[in-house]
Structure formats: structure tokens, C-alpha cells
Length: 312
Image (tube, rainbow, N blue to C red):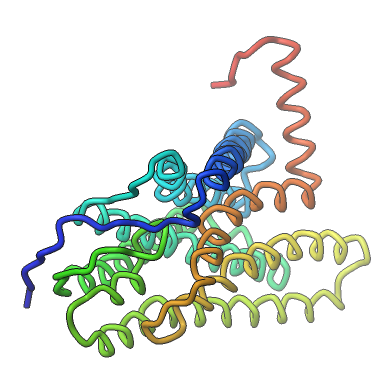
């Protein structure tokens, strides 16, 4: 059943109402966004043009970087633009589109992180079968399944929201359109819808997080049988993955694994998983990964010598 909507646009209260702080935030978040785009693009280019980074781990890392760029681009440009205007508005259709895209890329990222953990599990616990299990064909289907999972998750969130009646008020205490702020504005009892949101977003986040934790516990336990050199390399790789998992899943579980209530802290937590985490991901994966750092150095030195001439 679809309801009529008297609201044609929403007013976003943003992160702050102070003009001076807004100008400072514009500069700061512009810097953050540039780091997100350039850092993740650097990883994508490095993975594409470096032959020895053709393993499934780097294949998934390239897609993770692409999703991070898309994910942050759904909210960051709008947020920066709103820092420069007094009245921050978004149309009803624009709001639903933003809601869909946030959960589409967010859900896809969660599933990619999950298959990255599975990749590490197979590589460390079943090394002899690794190339058979994680073939290019299988990896391609895994990535496709991640995109499909993100799409289905996002469609559910959007369909739950689009059926709600919005008859006023239209002020949203957030900087982008998300489920809980919209539920707060709906002109009906949203308890059942809130439970469905928890079952969708919250349980996906929690279940994936539990699976990831169990996977890494098994991986760490299996390292006892490895050589000291192999153990250190595996620990370094897993440490990067575990750090990214905690940064991604912690805020998501805090936001979505609860009834349809909103807190003043939600906006800052949302900044963390929509902007800060995509910015930190390239730093985490490059600073702790010697293979990626060496590949970047060689790629840079190669093209400094011969000029910008990308290999075919």
C-alpha cells in the first residue's frame, strides 16, 4: 500500500549551523574527499597495471577501492555544497535516490569485505587448493554476488521507506537521507518498519561481522603450523583486513542494530563510515602491505623514466 506524500522536499540540518565552523568544515571535508578519490584511484591503477598483483586478494581490493569512491561520492559532494549555503534542502525523489545509493554501495562493501576474509581463510588454511577454489571465474561470481546482495539490500530499505506517509514536518537532523531519520518524520507508527530495518541492515552487519571474526580466529589459530616468516606475512595481511572490518562494521552495527530511534551522535558516527573509513582504507592497505608499496614505487619510477605511457 502506497501513501500520498505532502512533503516534496526535506530540509537537512547538517553537521552544524555555525557559519564559521561550516566554512572550516568545507575545507576539511574537501581535503578528505580528495584523499578518498586519489588514494583509492591509486590502488585501482596499481592493481590494474602491476602484473604480480593479480591474485584474488588484490582483485577484491581493487573493487573495494572502487566501491569506496562511489560510496563517499553519494554523500560527500552534497555535504560540502551544503556547507556553503544557508538553507540545505533535498527533494523527496533525490532523498530516496540518495538512500538507495548509500545502502547499495554500503551493502556491497560489506559483502566484498566478507569474501576478502574468505579469500584469506582459503589462502592460509588451504594453500594447496587455493588456486583451484579461488579461480578467476569464482572470484568474478563472488564480486557479482556482492553487487547483487547490495542491490537487494538497498531495494528492501528503499521500498520500506517509500511506502511511509510524510505529511510534515520535513526537517531532518542529519546531513544525508537515511532510514532512521526518515522513520522519525513519517506520519504513522513505524515500530514494525523499524524492526524490519533492523532485520535487514542490522542483522546483515552483525551476521557478516560474526562470520568475519570467526574466520580470522580460525586463521590466527592455524598460523601455529606456519613458519615464522609465513606467520608474520599472514599476520600483517590479516591485521589490515581486521582493522578495516572494525572501522566499517562498528559504526554500522551501532546505527542499524537498534529500533528506529535517533541520537545526536548518529551524524558523527555516519561521517565515520561514509567518509573517514573510505579515506583510511587506502592508507591501511598500503602502509601495512609491502607488495602494494613496492608496486606503487616501481609503477611511479617506470613512468617517471619513460613518461606517462601506460602499458596495454
